[in-house]
Image 1 (cartoon, rainbow, N blue to C red):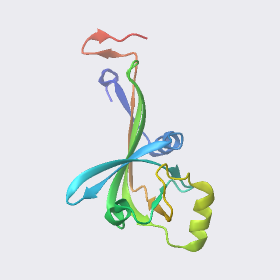
Image 2 (cartoon, rainbow, N blue to C red):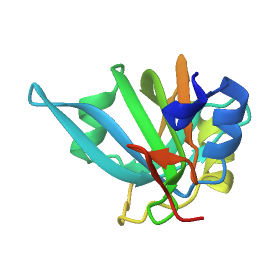
Image 3 (tube, rainbow, N blue to C red):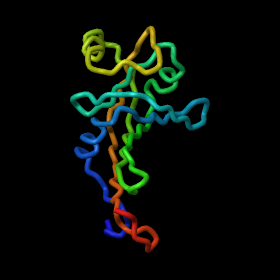
Length: 146
């Protein structure tokens, strides 16, 4: 990366470390043959997989089961033009093993949307990319305030 580009690429481990701090992400999937984006709360499992809890009756579960999806999360300071963004691409699957569901019930945050019959969805991180925006640099030749 040229230092004047205003960003730097992040490695996989750094991306996962940053994601673990974020409470909200966006799942990107296909709904009725069109792209759809939905904000969700989530957790990272020990192996780096993204896990979310949602309603078993939700359209989301039907749309993503077995599909390749993208998941994005970020933390950006608009005033300082700094922050980071991470995108994970992988296959989403509903967790069906009873022991695994029990473990996730103790570790994954409750959905912010009421879900009387909860289901856990796991996204395996097959491709992980990220960028850090470098605040305080110049933008179009103009110095940014510190």
